[in-house]
Image (cartoon, rainbow, N blue to C red; front, side):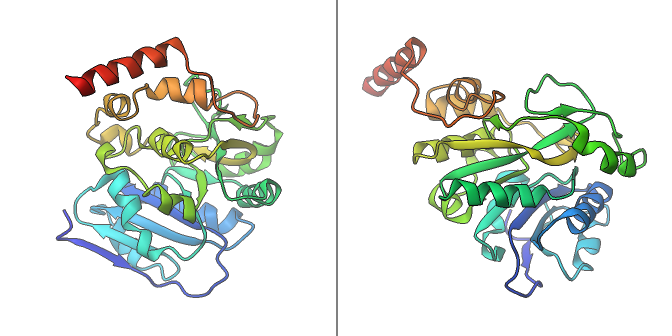
Length: 293
């Protein structure tokens, strides 16, 4: 896998606010729109690192031509976990923002992150922005509003005029992108867990690893917003059995963790250690029995 694996650092200067990691897989038109929105709508200047998987659609040539973008290029699709970890040596800031390539960042998304971090006053947190999506998938953390499902039918100007008119409170349960974590926490838990490669369920696994070291501030910001076209790359990928891997690794299901521990989707409140439930007691008992057998 690593035989045809290269990194390239071109950006200079020490005035970057955050480092934005964007994995992409032959999705050039969405990637261009995503990066264009970061440059156009960010309050601060950020380091952008693109993880190019294959890049056979012209992505690798386009990224290489952009002197203000650092990148990793793999000739094979190495997925999310290996991809995000591979960019570690390029990171220049104290915060990592993980983004999908099919996201359009809306004005001041990063200022909302900055204001919240200043308010928190410590470095033990994970924050997520709020996605606006065209389809109602039942996700309580999402604003449902259709501004297009492709680059060709994207209603950018209409979205820019209307995105702030939707009311959305801050919510519990940050796991998925766009999210931000301090680099020190990322390093402490070892980044993404490669056993989840190519990536399904690696998001809640990262949150669980942060939970294990004592992080309790998992907050989604209602005013930090992106438009998410919706899984344009993951629909083409080999799906790992992340649900089973998570259960075997942690002894509880991902759904149990995000609903009972992170309380994802509810109005934000600081989390505390939940009481051990009968279900968890049963699972822990099974684990002890297995360890003896």
